[in-house]
Image 1: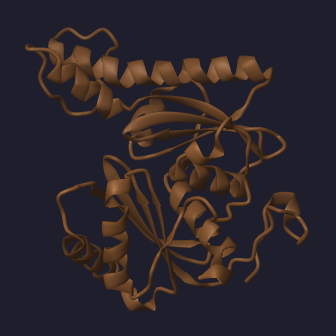
Image 2: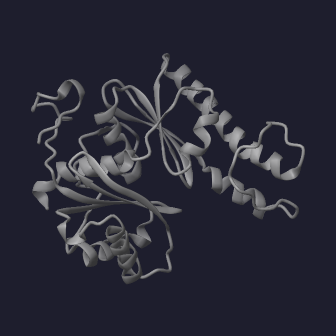
Length: 280
């Protein structure tokens, strides 16, 4: 099957045109807090799950978890025809790659220098751009019409801007929701760890509700404010897409209209794999 991107659907000369066959691809997005695992068949997402990132686990321990996940969804890992990894945890990349090889019997493609993404990165040092941000931008270009903002809410909350020429122009990075909350709790003697849920009122009448308000409503207000500032700088309203494990938690309390796309990074990795398949 052949799929294209928006108006490029039938234009093979377009750099954003791609051919996506009905291949089973195992994609791994390795973050500082979580490892997102996804299995794709063509454009269909078979499963997507999250595991906690643990630097102490061996490749065998990760391999067992990966194998169990495939079994949970009734899939045979050896049926996978290609594997791809994006990682912002270099010290764990080889361990995860070895685990993927143990389970699927294939060496994964690792997103990095020399891997084709089809996106024009216009920042001071393109090599510094995280593989996760590249994957998110690649998927967004196939799903949505630029210009747009991509918000990735994980260990860090990142804002990426892609212009109407499909160029990745840069963005902003700040502490993530849980990262900031953990810092607050560890840096004070009287504040305790809380569950992440919005309180009924912005003005909390006790310590726990006050912390929940600051965490949920405070981050929502920050996101709204950053979008406003980016739009002001660009001189126009912009489509905004949010992804990451915490997007569903915070975005509903934002005043700005934001599209939540949980599987953006996994879909992007599938596209990147397809672009580089002839190399594998």
